[in-house]
Image (spheres, protein in one colour):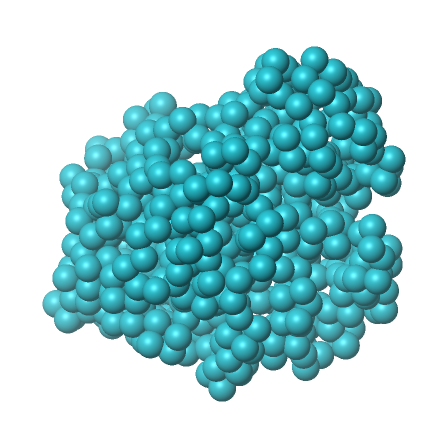
Length: 600
Ligand code: TEU
Ligand code: CA
């Protein structure tokens, strides 16, 4: 077993003796009430796991209609398993009219017809389990679709039994008696967050699209419905939830206007409402505590200071959250910005400082809402795409926290060469275009910005092979065009090439899996202000690793600080890496985008 080779001394003994060590290797759940610790952390399977995110619409089409589906995913499970990941997070697969690609759910207990049937889901779940992986679903319960039965009822009349499942308010009249929304809250998809519904003459709240009315968590009946639907899926055997904008579920019942300074970032006002902790603790008590599952909340609008209040294990709320600082470092309020390496390093250092042993972090640079990391954080030019994608993989697998890999990143897939507005599918882009162009923003400026920041960059189909449509569909019209670089960047080519980004991900994931220090070890940034090199150590007892990453297209020297040595090279992204161990006081000559991991 790999674990036996890693680390040493008393720590190793407790690590291997713990029943969870067996779980780690087999993918089975550790024994309940396992309280084995590592470096002060309670060991958990989800802390030791690597998660792979699937956006079903774009993963693999099985019937030629141009839309990815569950059968398609099942047919690719071997590919995912061979990468060495332990958990799959599936973006919404529920019945939906697709105003926001499944993040607008019409029926929480039904599979989206385009994706298949409940039998297909059961087959997928079985296939995942057979391969000793786990399946985590997307829980979208801040809002539903306006086509959900609850909303169809709710909008009918003020005294409808489902009225209080949503948030209804009368409008305000201005000086001329004109009807205005109840307050100035804005939607993330442009315009007011309130929509006047002619049926009853009241407004309903929608933080996202008009077709995504916010659910009213003040209503205990609604909360019970949510807990029941969670149990429905957990009883099928799923292993947890990624919770969509979960910090938004509790609303300030005073519904105060946002101030001018709050308006650019309403997420910080919408998140962490007065009853959020109460709801999460109730959910944990009623549902989560009864299963051996993992939860990860999308912490949009949550500050790092607030994070422990959601994930401190003693509070029994969530296991982990996605903090947005790193993934959105290249954007400010939807606008692309230049970022610097010291800024990125400061984020990870601060996360490490502010989360103590009771709180666990996530490490990710991408998902279905963000551009491709090799384009944003690496260099997707011909010269450096492969090296920089591997460097990012090295970082993801060696920082402290559970790593999340978004589909296609393991191939080094890049942003899409968007040209016109018609190339974009995302409702966020289409709504913003209508609101801003041409009056407030010139079209070319808008398009240039969106081509760097748009969510559609991540949503183009998986590139499986060099055949038409990249092997994503046998049809001629995928729902979103395949990136034209599929001829050179694709899974078929990368699975046969031992030097590919794909196989490098596999090696980095395997290294993490067998190296407790890379999971639980102390993190220390060796040179925070260095503009090109990110160098850090991960140390657990006597086991210590040195990670050196050259985040630039130029050679860079890294002088080893006092007490740090580069011993045995255990991972490197360039064949020409100097394998010669460098002693303390020596220097490493790093090639452009070179990444190395040494055992000290
Ligand atoms: O994302 C919400 C979110 O925080 C953003 O990434 C959002 O998409 C962006 O800021 C829009 O400008 C979650 C889902 O991940 C996303 O796909 C959904 O669209 C959204 O919630 C609504 O469910
Ligand atoms: Ca299909």
